[in-house]
Length: 97
Image 1: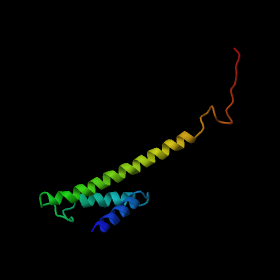
Image 2: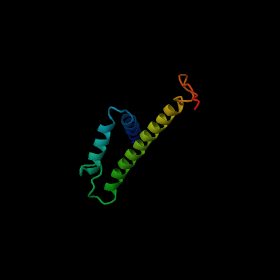
Image 3: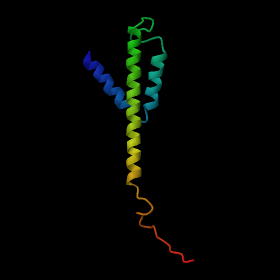
Image 4: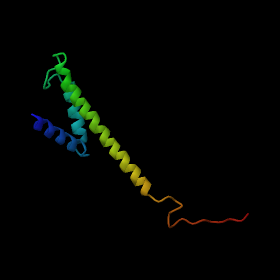
């Protein structure tokens, strides 16, 4: 059972980080959370909410990792970009008035 859960987690993580399939996984997760058909039905008071909480936590954790890596990548790309004072084509023009 642990291997099955770990396999699902690895698949979910890899798929949600792939830009082509990200929105499909997000939509499927939201449909699963809103649907009355679950692994453990929602009409069972505590047990029915545990699987929804686990899936919602998984979605939130993976989306935060996607946004964090995108933000880090964006900061690195702007950090490596030369500023206008470092640009080779930048020239200072002195004007006497």
